[in-house]
Image 1 (cartoon, rainbow, N blue to C red):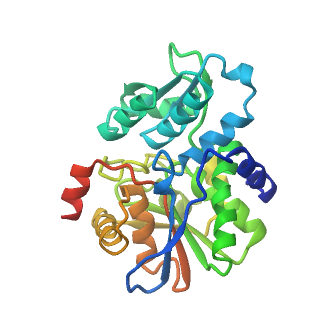
Image 2: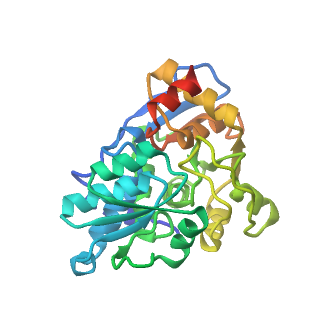
Length: 311
């Protein structure tokens, strides 16, 4: 089932005082489209993930949270879960891939979360089994959860209020919770709006799956785009994407780095690799030439790495 406007409105109430209503800024650059940036990098944890984490934890009975929470994340959902757990006074355990950037790991630890680094295969298995050996806690899925997607769907409500005549939205595709959460609400309230996923060439399973008409496994190569990308698409997320999205736009690492630099130069905004993919996709023209919103999903990138990529 896709996210409804009613569920998104309920989530907005649950997130009051926790997640920010982020601004929408026009990209200060000449482009084939009129591009706007939805600045989720300004959230308290530097990422949209606070919306999904906050909503699902608000809707989980307190007794189920008594042993704390567990999630699998490369960094941003980990911070969202740790942030909300600290607010509730419960422990948070995060299973992270051993390729996770140290800047995100340290951010989780600053929020009081315990990080377990695991090989990529074991990390991905945690998404599938919704558990991790030796950890007895309530599992919070980073994307495949109706309440997480409803939290993300609050972004769509804000977009329609701030730019009611928008033509298209481009959102980074990690597991699909962001793009499908937004798309569910837009399909109900503004069905004319096109919705695209953005992927990077080093890990683009959605594009391959859409082309094949069924979930496909692809090669995964780690890169500075660490907030999105995997080897495969979950079957139920693929079913949602096939129904809700207008396609996936795949960008190169160079396009992502150039978008990162452009946003920094023209708007003085720091974006991480995943967010840069959405901007690069909008700049490519494949999302159309009208009013296109790129979801700046986060800004959690190591500053030394950012300097090298944009220097």
